[in-house]
Length: 40
Image (cartoon, one colour):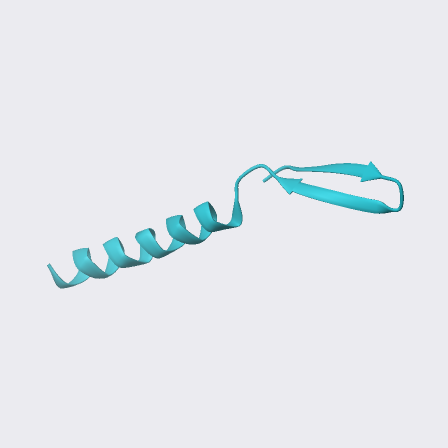
């Protein structure tokens, strides 16, 4: 995953290519579907 960095004065802002919420949701969905296919 790429990360962009912008410097503004004394502050550094890191911006990820994908939002953390999207990554979290993808992981949860993968685990949930894996569990369903295991039991189904």
